[in-house]
Amino acid sequence: MTPRERFIAALERRPLTGRVPHFELVFFLTMEAFGILHPSQRHYGQWDQMEEKERRLHRNQMADLYIMTAERFEHSAIFLHPNPGSFEETARLIDLVREKSGDRYFLMLHGDATFAIPDGNSMEAFAFRLADEPDKVHAEASAMVDNMLRYAERLRDHGGLDGFALCSDYCLNTGPFLSPRQFSEFVTPYLARLIRGERDLGFYTIKHTDGNIMPILDQLVQAGPHALHSIDPQAGVDIAEVKRLVGDRVCLIGNVNCGLLDSGTEAEVVENVRYCLKHGMPGGGYIFSTSNCIYTGMRLARYELMLETWREYGNY
Image (cartoon, rainbow, N blue to C red; front, side, top):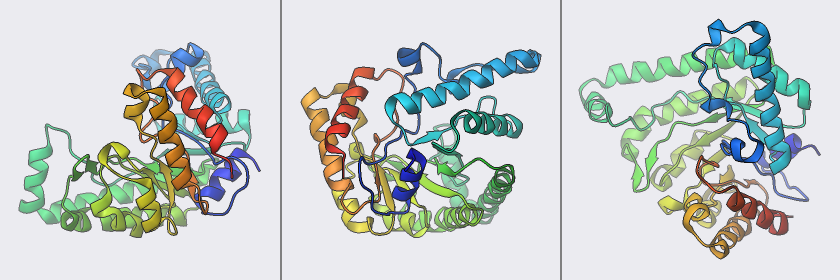
C-alpha cells in the first residue's frame, strides 16, 4: 500500500499491518531541515510584479519542499498551504505536487467554514451578537458553508485533492468557547452540513480543534467527520478515554504533547509517544501526530526523537 492508501485506510478505520500512518498539519522547521523557508511564512506582496518564470520557480520550490518533508519524515499526507492563495494558484500547486509525486501522498487543504473562537478584538462583540441578533448569526453561518461548498465543488471538478482539514478552533484548555447549548445552535448544524457536503463531493474530512473538546465530543462526532485532530493533552484530553468513547465511530489523530516536545525530558517524550500509540492504535482508526503541529522554535531533534519512538513502537 502507498502512504496515501494507508492514510485512507486509517480514516476509514480499516485494519492495517505495518506502521501506523503519520502526518503533521504543518511542519514549520523547513529552514532547519532543508535551509528553505516554509511557504506559508513567505511574503508574496510583489507576486503581481514577478515575471512568470520567477513564479514558476516559487511554485516548483514549494511543491518540492512539501514532498521532501513527506519523504524525510515519513508523512502519509500533505496539508498544502498555497501562497498566494487564489483558486488558480491553489490548483497549480495541487497539480505540481501530483505531477512530482503521483498518488503517493494524501493531499488536503483547509476546508472549514464554521465559527471559531473570535480573536480578542471581536470576542465581546461576537458574544453580544449571539444574544442580540441570532438570526443574522445563523444567516452568516449558512452563507459561509454555502461559499465553502461552492469552492469545494470547483476543487472536485479540478481534481487531484483528497480531502479537507477543517481548522476552526472551538475550544480553550478549560473547554469550548461556546457553551454546549450555544455550540449545538450556532456551530453543530453548520459543521454537519459542511461535512456532509464535502463528503458528498467525494472528499475525506478531518475536523481539527485544539483545547478541551470533551463537553462537545459527541456533537463533533455526530457531525460526521472521518477523523478528529488534535486530541489535545495540554487541555487534559486523554486519548485512551476518547478512544473508549468514540473510537468505533471516528478516526483519531494526534495526542503527542507539543509542550513536552519543547520543555519535557527525553524520557517524558518517549513515554508520551508510547502512551499515544498504546491507546490509539488498537483496532485501527488512528493516525500518529502531535497535538498541534511542528511549529517554529521547536527543536528538530525532539521531533526526530518522537519519530524514532514511533518507528520502534508504532507497528501493528
